[in-house]
Length: 226
Image (cartoon, helix red, strand yellow):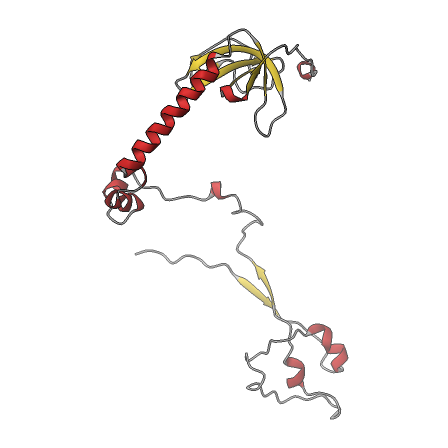
């Protein structure tokens, strides 16, 4: 048998006021739209204000403020806002591939996406065209030349071209650059394979389209002294 989960213990704090008070004194405790019975018309209290000229308790309770709820579950504020800490269900690849009610199964039956021969042929042609363009751009960037890298959303960075060609970590042509300052991501190696030599954080691999070769003298940003 499966044990029922323990629910958080909640405490309801009802507003309190003196037994003898005027409607104006009671008004700060009230809020429109809430009544003890859920309906103003169905609520019939037997108490009235001593003065017959003042509203009955029924009228006052028609705008009763909601109760305050205190959580005693022990959960910390924002504890589950980071979804990386939430345990997620995962299914093995083989088991998912055998399911008939999955998105993958639907795409296979409908021959859509990567299961469409026409789309696959078009994607292959586009990749081939992109590779040809990158090869032409890379051939105009000789190893050892000074360069400036202008990647989208990043400031210009200068360095020296150390590698030009294909890589094992990603498809296409890549330019290995040794920056003048520690503005890179590696030391010229990726996933254990070395493509060129440089200090840690000085090396980076970028696409040929963001590399400009020319007379770019070395600039000192003072990052080595930090």
